[in-house]
Length: 113
Length: 145
Image 1: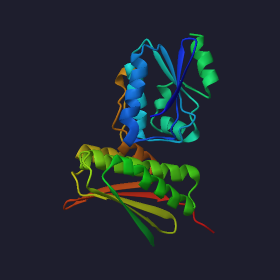
Image 2: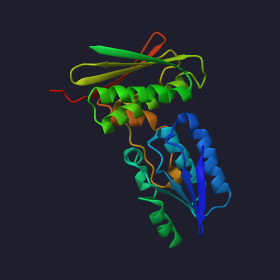
Image 3: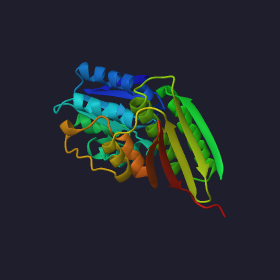
Image 4: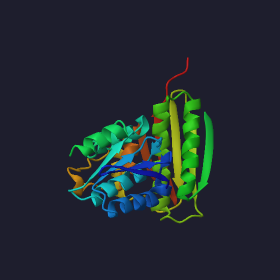
């Protein structure tokens, strides 16, 4: 999977540069996210603004990464388009993830912690 | 009744081709963007489920996706000749289930595909005839005037 990585203060931002997160790429996607977790990032913002379609396998990869963060660290999402946002609502994962409209809002909220 | 049948190899990488094609058919038939995307998602979930569980991830088998229409209905059949869907999973597909996830530790990474199909389609049925698994999905479509 292709990502654009950046860091603002203590917040690590990974923007997904793919339009679809589906079963065929989900395991690699999860590995990439777990690496970001293993690097010791305390707060990760996953920017979904380029993603137009996600299936349950892609969702599962993001959930696996959230679990890998443990209870002390945070993985939050930003930029979810309607199709992606609908998937989180349908599966009620919008209750488990903090979701922000854009990266600026996400970084601001997570920098204030 | 108009009908088209898509056949893909049992490779996860081929699933998006079929799912996107069905989305295009849905839009052509007059479904809105959101409904078409919901059908696309259900095709992706059904075909992925088939490849992973009926064919145990092995390529070289066939997944067929037939789309047909009546005046106000879109019918989809996803067929394979692999292992059947276990009874408890059929129950989830037909009747739905409450997945209890109250905190981060209790979150499940998988097992949502059939529930998504249940939630998004108007009717769902599953049969096993001989070695043929047939998943039948129906979505109501707006009538063109």
